[in-house]
Image 1 (cartoon, rainbow, N blue to C red):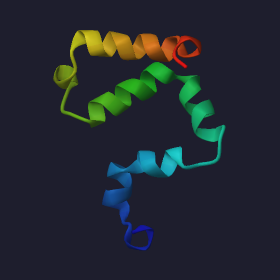
Image 2: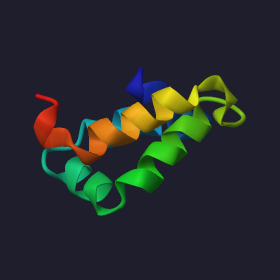
Image 3: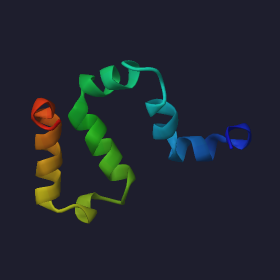
Image 4: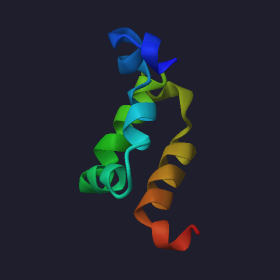
Length: 71
């Protein structure tokens, strides 16, 4: 699969390439601005945020902001 990868595929599925990097590289970059990263992911999964309820967005932000509580 990776031998046949081209830019369109890599752009659409960048997160697979990003998240397989050795720890703590992805975590460090995400932690620098977690709200931006989450918003980018959510927007890339749809045209806008209408696919997500306000409750789901708030819960996801709460969970991310309180990672120490969600283990």
